[in-house]
Amino acid sequence: METIIQENIQSEIDRTFLVHKRQSILNRTQSIKERKALLEKLLAWIKNNQGDIRKAIHADFKKPYLEIDLSEIFVVTSEIKHALKNIDKWIKPQKVSTPLPMLGTKSHVQYEPKGTSLIIAPWNYPFNLAIGPLVSAIAAGCTAIIKPSELTPHTSALLRRLVAETFDKSQVALFEGEVEVAQLLLDKPFDHIFFTGSPAVGKIIMKAAAENLSSVTLELGGKSPAIIDFNSDLKDAAAKIIWGKFVNCGQTCIAPDYVLVHHSVKEAFLTALKNELEKMYDPSGKGIEKSKDYARIVNGKHLKRLKNLLADAELKGAEKYFGGYVDEEEMFFEPTVLTELSEDMDIMQEEIFGPLLPVLSFGDLEEAIQYINMKPKPLALYMFSNDDDNIKRVFQETSSGGAVANDCVLHFLQNELPFGGVNNSGIGKAHGHFGFLAFSNQKAVMHQRVGLTASKPLYPPYGFAGKKI
Ligand code: NAD
Image (cartoon, rainbow, N blue to C red; front, side, top):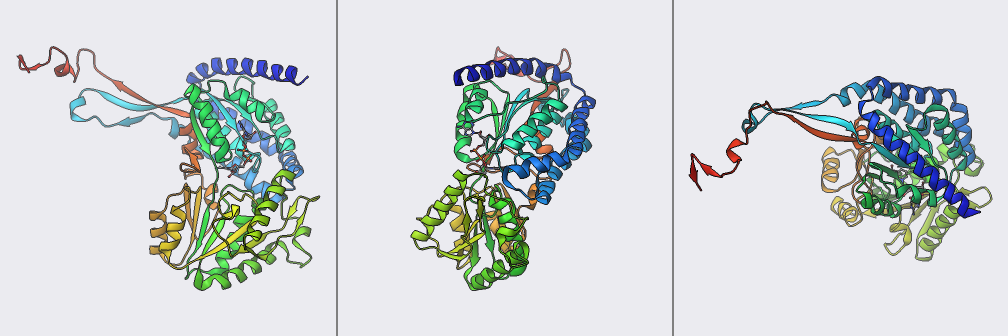
């Protein structure tokens, strides 16, 4: 039975890929008006189905409606509006100047759609991370096949409906399913693969892409640090870190993974963290598990993974400053802050991707910088300080996909900035113009005048003024 289903999917993938291949050639002459019409249609569908989007994501992991509105719906609609406003500018051929030896020629960069694209999405922002890249693909004129995550089935079904009701199959298609479906898709020679997920699977995607020399954008994860300088506003920093860490129950790629706090303010910072956490998630004092503003862990496998991280850390000497309560039936994992950490703990080696926050201390900034530089390059780095020189120093002496001073996570919403990682945390950039470029081939175009060539002196027979050299 399973083999028959597999064969059906295989032939459906083969057929769809062929259709997309043909369409992608037609798309080379697709007008901006047509691309805008597709984006307008997508925007209208989202506006008309906001309630269903909320319900689907909430059914998957009890994500609060307000978080859905901000981090799934608003992020995507603002990406669409940004593309609609800027697409004429992005697509315009860019004239370049002519150097002296090229005199007589004219050159420009032409933005052509790469062609067929594959978008593989994760579960943690299941709507945003499937549709956000689609906006860039459409703006650039690519066809797209989307593979949503199997771990968020309600959102996956909703995305299937969105695609069916909004697009012609020849432009945008969607295949639901487990990892096997992703593997079947990866066998196809896509022109571009846009993957969001873990560094481990990112390596698998890159290997598969190499077989066809497909270009890739890899939006991965990792351990994003937050530094608290001795002179920072601790209450302000604590509130921002509590929000950035515990929004979506810690299941955010750019959540602060761990905190490095100056030793002189460690105790005061921990107290501030506790106060801000209670204010946000337990204002009535009835327990955070009663809060409707706190999401759940996506499934039992991840709950177990997080429990193991906590158990391993405690076994090796970590102390719970607060939190640690787990209700397996409810998939509830209390926001938990840990101190007394060491490098032999799994929690200090793996991306946490859940509501566990290790707080480590440092003596001087050099130590914090060195600590970060010894680990793989993070997706984001957050620096809380009142000293601009210290902020500048940290941003200059460390490498990360993004860097934010005195806040966290917010840079995702700034669509004028490139979003992405570096090496272990990602390859390539997304959002706005950078997303458009990811799905575009920047073609070098030169026009020469008939009968004129700058390279004539270079033609054989080689020599100078008739003399052989
Ligand atoms: P994942 O890598 O397990 O899965 C992502 C997608 O890849 C899913 O659609 C899944 O079906 C598919 N997949 C899994 N194994 C595969 C395989 N062997 N071959 C082909 N496809 C495969 O990631 P996840 O658990 O869904 O998401 C969490 C990870 O994603 C974290 O590491 C997080 O940091 C990262 N992430 C990054 C960003 C970003 O923008 N950089 C955003 C969100 C999440």
